[in-house]
Amino acid sequence: MLKSMPKIILIRIAIISLFLSAHQVKSQNATLAAELNNFMNDAVFFTDKYITPATDAAVYQAASSWANTPKKAKLWDFTLGIHGNAFVVPQSDRSFAISNGDFKFFQIQNATAGNTPTALGNNQYLTLVGQLTINDATTPQTTTDVLLKTPEGINMETVVYPYVQTSLGLLYGTELVAKYSPKTQLKNVAYQVYGFGLKHNLSQYFKQLEKNNFHLSTLVGYSNEDITVAFLDVKTAYGDLGLNALNSKIDTWQWQLNGSKEFKKLEVSTGLIMNSSHFDYKLQGKNSKVFGLNVQEELNKRLTSIYKTKVNIIGEIAARYKISQFYIQTSLAFGKFVNSNLSLQYQFKKNKNKK
Image 1 (cartoon, one colour):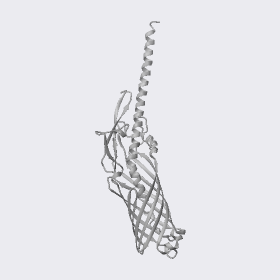
Image 2 (cartoon, one colour):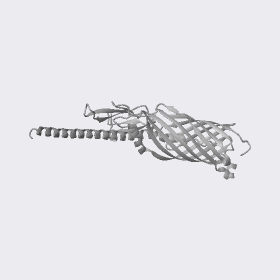
Image 3 (cartoon, rainbow, N blue to C red):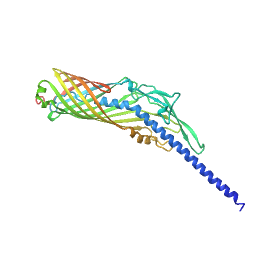
Image 4 (cartoon, helix red, strand yellow):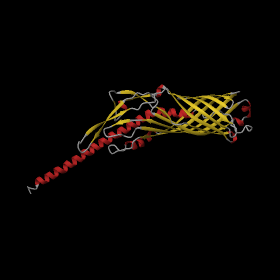
């Protein structure tokens, strides 16, 4: 019996050692999980601050110059316009302030606070540093640095992009409007918009208005704005986290009321625009697992927390000058932002006799 005692003691020591080792691994795994959770919370916080000014601006860009004129369109008259859109980037939306207190995982390298650009900002950047606790077979517990270079902005004071817009006269003073822009690349930002709408003339019901060359119309439209930006450059010793690009999709429904007065070949108009936009976001890049976790997939789930719907009230003024069947038009939309538009339009008249 005495000879068996050492074996029992050894077995007990082995069991206790296994238990302590398992507890240590579990504790280390829990630490890593908490650190990854903090990393993703910081990434969502940063994403919201970085991209929101650009998506807000995109709504203004897409809202402008839907109605060439409030006048009643003749049946099958077709207008083709080439538009140049110019958006002035406000100074207040080019950067945002961050401090170490804003983050749970990251700290600003060699600083406690600083300014970093939004997607509409300059080409400056900050470096954020965090640490992950790693447990593996050869080294029970090590730490690895995670470095994040904050993304730069477009570094432009005015954003210019072209698009094509068409309108077709239908029955009863209704007009079908459509717009489309090719994908525009601005440094590390790609932007594209398309949309369609229906405009209906209201002044046809008030003959006295038309007699005095006053015109009224209403329009309902839908547009889709697509923005992709080069995003978080996250460096770890264990690979790419798959956060190379951030895609923003914006669905906008727009209602507007326009009125104009004709002075021979010149038409001056004003408009009131109200739109409602829904924003959603998705990270793109190499989709791989790091530390047993698909970081990109998990972050895309968490980004749903910053999806939002916003309502904008926008004013618009415009002037349109006729040269034969050509028109030159300039417009200015204003509210939170200022957006200007210049276009050259040509009207193909299919029905010259019917009003």
